[in-house]
Image (cartoon, rainbow, N blue to C red; front, side):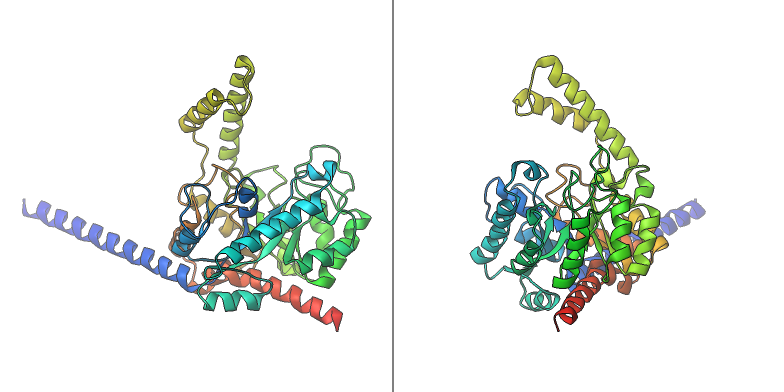
Length: 401
């Protein structure tokens, strides 16, 4: 019996050591999350508040972001997405809508000046971080608010916009959208789009190549004189054929361009299996709605949809998000990947382990488990995108001198 007892004791000791090491790694991840200036390239808080203003200084019942949870997770510089839907390209009013959402970001900061401050530069973010507050830089999702007037590039720069996603769900006057299933309107950038990219370089706005076709990505990198970002995209390798995610060839080009892809957490961006499950669930819900004559606001349909989604969950896992980071590092190197969660923008599709802004330590923990160094993780958290932002600022400053 003695050998058996010895084996049990040995196994227990190994298990306890493993648990102790794991706890230490989680503590290290938490500490790093609160040491580094975590910068997330895309959080859709302004559009969330468009449906009703909330006090973000306290823990909120809904949404993925608020001050309390951001501090818990170590989030220091979330880019507030000024999202303007493609429908405004048809109805008009895109510039007015963008202005109203920018005003909402300023309202957050003005209502809680001890907790938030709008950031206009890398140096601003550094200072705000040292003051213990959360910096709110802004990016504009969709170039539609430029409304065809190149002077509006400088207008939105003056309002605080520091990147522009060239389009969104539909082709616009700037370029083609990866989501638009109609024939590509321009075959990449339009003539006006090329002028706008040059003007963005001149005034100091980062060019965001999320949501665009491969032709647009390549044409932008052919002509831009500064690095670009993909503020909330992932790797097409894991979702074959889905152009919204970046292809391997385009990710490789980031190395020469100096740009950064910031990984989107939405489960449909992360795995093909999640896309397939989401499609199956949507078809089942649509069939039920048609059979029973229900619209999307009907409570019976919402109850049915909740049941379907619970029975066939489509969520990816945090480890699969890290797979995307690994893929970018393999293709382009550690200097070309960052975080672009799309919190408050992808609804109830966030992966297990990354459900809201408290989760950045979880991501760092899994990066440590994969063997990433602290220097590597610091680059992913903020240094890579800051390098791009700084290069864009410097090029704009030089063009004005």
